[in-house]
Image (cartoon, helix red, strand yellow):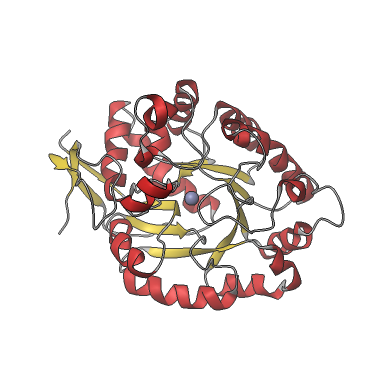
Length: 349
Ligand SMILES: [Zn+2]
């Protein structure tokens, strides 16, 4: 085949940032997505209704085609303002994002410590009223699933017991375990989700392609560094098998997370800016496994289903087999696969 058509993507996890960065990066999501779930770890974070109000205005200026779906950043302060949760919802938030303290970009000072996460069984746990209200409102809980205090490569596996507790305590709360990276998480999701349709997970593009060797195997490559960090070859292989499986509770969340090159090279910020190559590289990946027919389910339909949103009747994306040279930088940000030539080009009007 020399031409592929597919519905515009549902990116269930993207960082559009704010300010100037938002203006630079949003067009890359806008060109290929029907919807996107926007993460709330801006600075300041989207953790009060007022902040979400002004962020919505900024996003509305930057996205012309993609329907933005908002999230709020869960904070312990919200326990004192449970009415905020319905306000978030009326402002277009479909989910709350839980960041354990210190595990990724802008996640310091959330108050959601290891102790809080490991004591959910106690009535006095400060997260419980908040999660109960999210459950009541039908807001989805999106999890950055890494347990603080563990060795970095073990944090995701150690977090799975927290997921167990959450599923048991909140019987109608829907949960997305975001950007999973390990064999353990794949096993957990496939075994639990098969019997419980409240649990889903997202996969990024870059975790299907990278292992820890890309980050530190040869010379240190800050541009391949993200959280959770890419793991062992057998972990990546398990993620690939999951992406290619006909399994309704796994879908695309790119976790495209731009930083200026200077921040990545000097401060070691975590995050990979994949939006500029997202659809091209996904088509390449699924074609390599002779699985293009599965791509609309993985990258669009299952997320619509999980988030209970109707399919949109939009003109399809058209990709043609023509070399696409990924730029080295885009206004000071290095895209995923910079400098590579990819086989598929998105046809744009
Ligand atoms: Zn993320």
